[in-house]
Image (tube, rainbow, N blue to C red; front, top):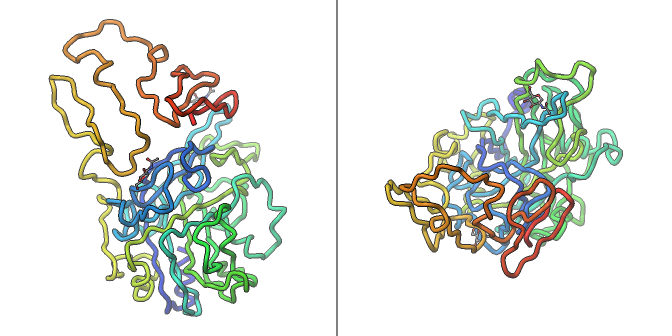
Length: 405
Ligand SMILES: *[C@@H]1O[C@H](CO)[C@@H](O)[C@H](O)[C@H]1NC(C)=O
Ligand SMILES: *[C@@H]1O[C@H](CO)[C@@H](O)[C@H](O)[C@H]1NC(C)=O
């Protein structure tokens, strides 16, 4: 709504895409920060289905993805953020549901993605294959490093239909929207440095408080001279179901999945994955004033059903097997995003369905049939296998969590 207001106030002549990407998965993976390992905290991920635990930078995800949860079929990129929880006064946590943003159709949760040309209409260089970046730091718990009116004070914010850095301190009856603005100045060389952020910087100067980074323009630092389109992510968290149990003592019950009750640790990750030159063509010719992805004739529009995951087949290699004979595991599965090489042997360790079993065995005493690499191997409350597959050993992260690595 704010966008429409601003758009009316400042006529747009520049390339702008605004589109929903429905939820792809919510899981503890972060292939940029912890490739090949389970991530320390939970993320929500949208975009192409080539997303997996490792995301080798040499893989062209625009080619390996076979579908996407984004409105534009050509966008096989992945975008992810931390996940919001509500902490009940009794100490339990529940995930805050996500809802579609205004004017984006009926996408299932996920987020709204913007690509914006500099407001002056200035030229920019689009992202290259293999480009990745992260903004924000999950370990931050204060705004001490942010000076008033700096770009940083606008980059990672919350809108209780007003803006704040850090979680709003009041009830937000209509929900809370998080805003993540990525930097738009690139060093022009590095696709993805080890820290995933030093190759990009914000433009010089101070945003206009009425327009924020969205309409900010200016020059890039000399170290990062190449202007990129602005990527901006919005996630709408539905806090309405919690209004009746919101704390009455003024405390703030929201926490991010990395144990952050402040909101200052908000972060967003981006892995470029547009097909061919589709993003460049769209940025050159499409000017979505806020709510109409279909106006962009350069790109292929997917329906709500398509982005909300009507799938041509079940994920993995799981053709329907009607029985009554036991189903067989499909060998040599080459489904997209398949992780690990361990061949599960479920069909041989389970009784055939025609043999009734009277006493179900408690699952905690059944040796885990699948001991793939990266599985959990011990820790308090863990009743699964503690043997790791050959070539890996049980690495104890803490007393609650360990992994075969
Ligand atoms: C806290 O309250 C919720 C909602 O009534 C309930 O589902 C949950 O089990 C409770 N947790 C504890 C630890 O009592
Ligand atoms: C991740 O997916 C790519 C294909 O996109 C595949 O080459 C790679 O092996 C997968 N990684 C893992 C750990 O399975």
